[in-house]
Image: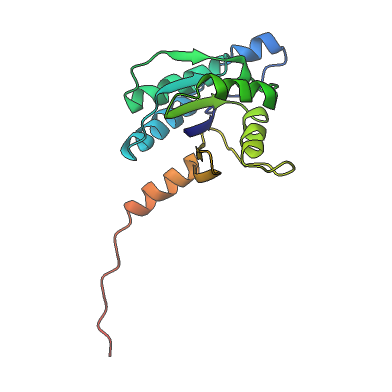
Length: 174
């Protein structure tokens, strides 16, 4: 199974009251981040059987925007196992539920999602730097669990900028 871990995109400042924070939407920059990440993933040939997000608004929005760019026609599924405070046991139950899928996109929050990613990779004390709207591809099979790549919005911007840079003309050697 291939699991794509994605932290939600930019959503402005945290709200003091938890019920208000749960309804916090992506800001304009976050919407652009999610669409761009989805477009890059689509260009890379990413396909997912299921898209699962935390029930918090910003994660669901991020998942929806990325899924649209990927051309995913299935329903968005919300699961409390991807909430910020969820534990690894809940995460394992989520993975068991999708065991028949070839690939899934999970959209959640820090610290929970990053901690689950680290534990899945066998790192008990390490953490994974999952920036906002970053996506990590993890391949899980009977023999091993392996991080294939980690793509951040900043890396996408850097690569886009480099692609626009023209090579310097060759100078004649003396």
